[in-house]
Image (cartoon, rainbow, N blue to C red; front, side, top):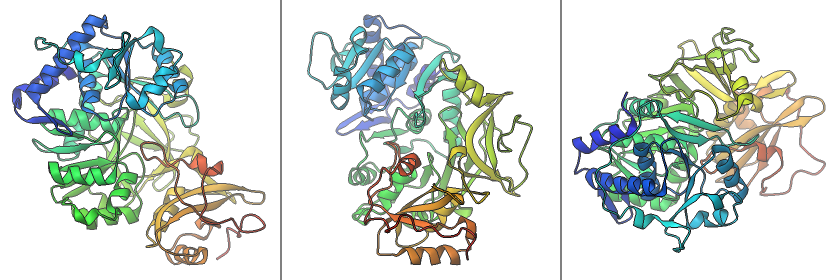
Length: 523
């Protein structure tokens, strides 16, 4: 297996004059980008950074962030990217946890760096920030003359360490080797049917698995990575038209914002032939809208994680809405019974259980960074227990129904929020929907739907819609809340915990006397 640096050099040899990266008015060919990367590696050397060191980045999706990523691959430095919105204490945690030697930041993340307790002892690199004696200017570092850099580490070296979202505890570091990263990139190309010189919109964050996957995949095929530092629907549509983007790989939330934007029809999006989504389940309603709007050659559903990247792929998502398909080319996936003690304790066809993946896959990680407690919980007998719930149907296709912790148990029955969300999403007045279980003295939990409307609709109308859709009585929502926005993470993942905690804004006051709870067994 090639290391990533050698892989990039091979791409330069194949497509030296192809445009590799675009950021505003900046356009670099593979040959030109290689020169910038080589200069940055030489500057890292002057700073005393060496293979195995961790370098934390707090950057948006700019060409500088992508260049730092590749320079780390050549030099053997472990790039450790975090959310550019991180607060000082979050930055401190990642610096201390990774034992970082350097940090790269920009204007939007400078406040966190300024107030950080851990940054003072690190080498600091500023991107477009005011110059100072103790901060190296990125602009100077990539402007130095340097020989073409030669890759310094093997495919077994560490490449990147991503941090999990940390929604329930401190983020967990996920270190990954060059060989796993490249295997995932090759699989991404194959599973999406990407061809030579594809063009993708580089908007998924480079601190997230989806952003890194797009970056590496494009490099393998002489493709173009078009930077969009911060998602804005109008800017995204303008770039699609201007750069003739051929594929999109986004979370469902961004697709939703795009196709429902008031000016969508004004832009030419006909160059897009391939759509991919990951990060969350896509409702049936949105999937149908994408197919009707883009009329793409294919829509691919990717199901995976930071730890193993691809679990399963459905390369024709429209044909079987809700299906996550079958295992990716580097993976083997099963469904274990809920609370199974062993990966051999498998669920039956159509039985909901916990999704598990074989750790021997080429894309797999090997364990969390200094978190033996997390390893003990998730890694068992050579399998990764994902914490996701799902089932396989009679065709062997996987359906992801949620998280083990999100399962709603009402009156002794297990209810998946995803199934109800997909049902309600098909109502024309429903823009977005999220379903959770709310505590109830009699039933344990009752199903509650939080709805963002795009047209007037009443609770009674939604109740009738669920009933006529064939949704089982015990699964139907017993309470509806109309909200201004559905809470999500920076990468578009639904944050159910915020709904449980009451962190939302309603369109109107809740019903008097508390929740309007109905008997879950009623018709």
